[in-house]
Length: 170
Image 1 (cartoon, one colour):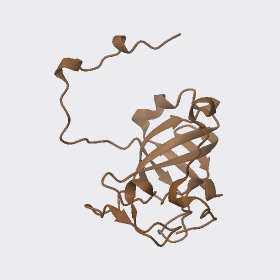
Image 2: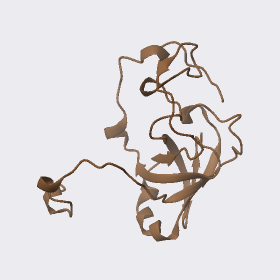
Image 3: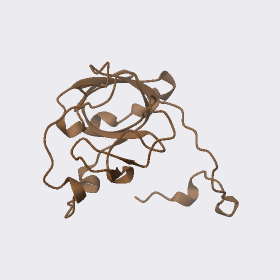
Image 4: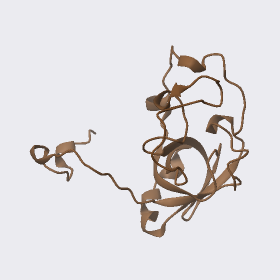
């Protein structure tokens, strides 16, 4: 069965205007063992830490059927980042200045984070997760199921990071 976008409630395309400002409301908050920035794994794939995503009550119906997935994309807001940010920075794994769109720094024009987290269990409005690389009390913007048939892409280029991968924390 195909989803028919034309039957969804969206604004009319002929009335589309480019937004000057975009605002989001958090859907929840994550509780993690990382109370300071020191010691946070630099990527979710390098983390053994567990955490708990607390979904706010008005979003509880959105958790329906999520237990059928093993992993989620978790989008969150780096609320401690002071804007504006420089557009080049030195990443953890290199000594050279790189464009921020070529690194995974939290210091971005739109400080949005993305992690793939393993679902351990869901209890009420709480999603217990592992592979956490997120500071405690970070606002959660969205959750999407990770679907390996769609999301697992083989790559043939890894840019400047090729050969520099190692387990690190901040």
